[in-house]
Length: 522
Image (cartoon, rainbow, N blue to C red; front, side, top):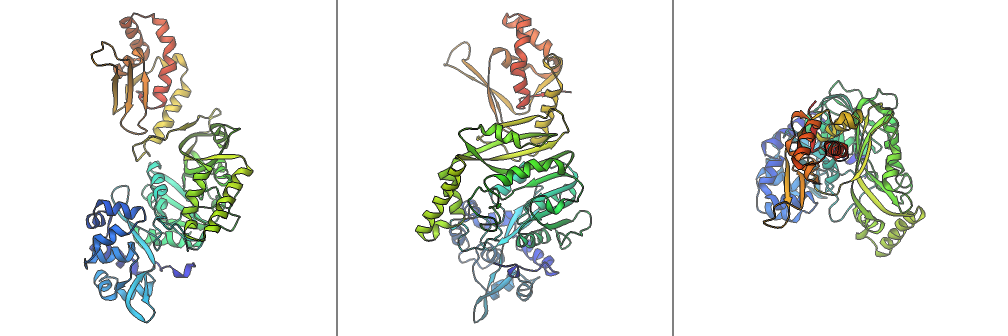
């Protein structure tokens, strides 16, 4: 696979965009055409339901769907009808299409996958990737070159939903791939830089940006303010001489594999042993962040029996940075090897080679006594604090996406708790967060519940058990009275000593604030 097989982002790209919009080749348009089940299957890389849904439909939308999403050879006459502004001839000249038959151009085939994608505010965007590589699908990367470029998969969507979307001056998308994160960043960053080690990925990202935003986006490093500078290189090397960034996002090649440097799949295999790439990225990010800036990334990390994974992840955090690290999933080394061998399409090849590759993965993990691999989110904030706030936790449960707004709120609460000792904590006023509900559990007809549970309906959607005092306190928090005054009133109601209730309160009040059940009013 080489760069020469990609389209050229020339003047025709504006006309292609015009044709896509005219045919309703948009997220809503394709959803209406295919129906929800076939649309969801297509997102998983399965094409049969979409093929059935478009069978016999010769309209422009069905034609573009077959051409750019299903990778089907399409009669030239139908392509001409679906691309009246660009024309099939110009699409051939610009490299979007290629003859499907060796004896002429009676049928045409797309050279890339173009997938409708909704922006943060409902914008109609399109993600370009290698043909059939919007997601890994059932065949994985079998038969693809190591520089293959995938489109927007589940990891890309997760990172986009986690990202803080406050306006910033300078943002960096490290490991841009098909340009998904850079596309989002253009909506709230004055200057965007996108880097990748894979030159093919930079070419594809330029196509994504140009098609979605216009021809002036993503041509190279000398863009006007508001454009995207595309640079080639590993980790922070391409921006080593740049000023610090207010926001860094990265969906890096985090897969822990036995691939040697220069081998493996560029989009997932970082070429460093174990989880060294993620560790290096995290530990180096602090010096690339402006004061108050955020670095948000997805990561895999090794877990051994002789070291707590929380302590290990906390040791990655650079000085002067607060951190919020969330483990979302854990896989034993066998499951992990199987997952990524299938992603590479190894299961479609020679069975003996598959078994040998599987064995090599397990040898690699055994050499470092790795028993499982963790996957999760890592967020750094450059606070400059001498005593940084570092929270490493496991949360495999459902969350409400997007979570971007919850990230700065989390760190603001941590700042509050860091600045308030137990005595000061009781002088503050609190309000119950929006969407928090109370559940009372116990036998039917009982006078008092056995358990009281507070549950969040938004954000991290946490739940926590309460006793009578803490439940009564939370239910009374409307921001009007200081915590101490509320506790004194509750102590009188439950006939407990005032000082005893006050002394115990910080032990349950701090977690309620930290986890977002209660919000400091001031």
